[in-house]
Image: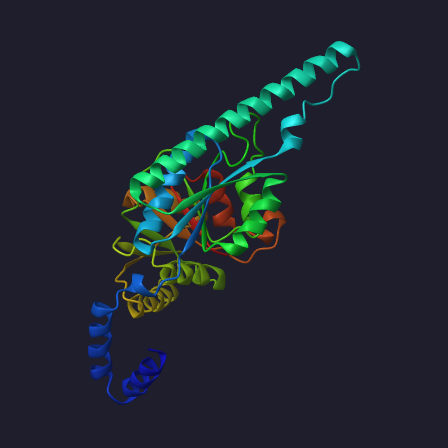
Length: 313
């Protein structure tokens, strides 16, 4: 196939019309999904309340690719055992011990419920699956496992603590900063993804993100809109045309839009007005605190978005 493509690229330089005709034929006989390589999807089960949405989104990705789902439940003993500063005394120690015991039981029950739901959903959808339970630092464990999976699906909220102890506000940020990506972070309540909004800033990172999304073959039938924010209409038009051409070269038709204003402030309202079901967002290259890892827009999305996010950089 590669030799054929190389030959036709040579033809494209001599006869663009013949090359376009060949591209049209091959896109019909060799759909995009046939060449994608999503075969293993890591599914963070987190709390049982969020696990159903995460599982259903993962199944939606897995079925067109005949991929396997690996459900991940993590218990963090240090967080379950931390009861805060306390005075010395036999009674206080006994109470703390009982609290830890109750937390462990509740976490174990939540993991069982999430695992049973995960298996039931996967069997009902005829999707290959297995469940893995790990104990330790959740960020380190997830960062290790992501090396052996093509994409991860986690909840925007409720990642690891199974509803027993509060999670750090920046849990998802820390997860992505540890290298857990590409990641689809989804809302607690499931909504099928039928419309995809790509936020393109012109940065290398945001370009890498939409390229990874295209190569993944995810949501191949969903309408896609690429939006560029800012006041420079000429620059926006040039970037949008190039991004649209990349999608078209991979068999994906898109619409584009130049929106004024700031992505940091206006992206979420724009996405909701367009009725987007997922936002594909990259990072801009800023170097302050968490912005060393996340651009300002991506950081705000992680903290505030009610919509699923696809992040690859």
